[in-house]
Length: 303
Image 1 (spheres, rainbow, N blue to C red):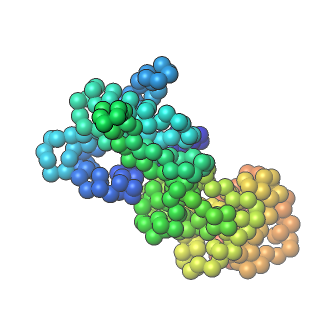
Image 2: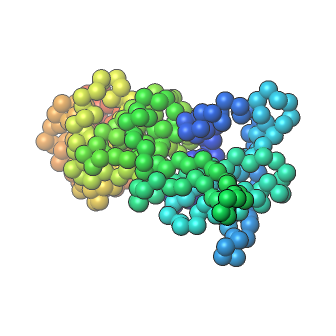
Image 3: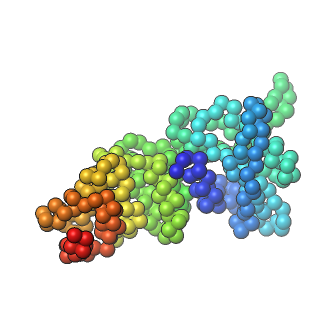
């Protein structure tokens, strides 16, 4: 799934949660039940005459103020752009003119580099006279510390911590903490899949990092560890990292040994010769195994 599609789906699905996490002052006066997304608005870029699609525009009522409405314009910027404040100002003017409603503009910067702070202002001024001072809210993920969101039970935090500022040695820990947080949220399958897809897209572990992840996973409480393993099927993720069927088989064996203590040599030999579809099937079945008899019965049924 490409970045643009993934972020738009994530933000639409968890729009109010996004506001609560990053814009609590705005969340305080948004009537959550009134939020509706407007059809895509396409405008001609004033600077380049190119046509652009506004990322996301939502209409909402002010809480406690009857039918008074306003717009929230959220623009996801995946690459640095020198004239971005000017573009935000242009979109503000066009949206304000078309809908005749107040517009709350928000820019979400999701690229990894550069890490310099982005401006949230566009100005037109003369000596002694300011014509325009336009402000928009800036959320720049690469300048946020993932640890500040560690204990925030918000699905958007679980999804976007992987895009925040992370020291290289913390990457396995961040992956695990995101999954632990997600396990506590008890979301439905579709929303859980959306978040895990986001996490996997932006924090793919190397083989060495995957090993460190497994070591850290073993240190958490058994019941929680089981929930994390069932939630993510981490063996699939790591199997993709290792890149071939042999790697996926080896990962399965490590998971079985972790879960059951040991695996008989004859069972190891069978697993090492399983085809791709059976490896996938065993990866799903592993969470229902209670002892080695379950493993042997599963293998026997597929000989």
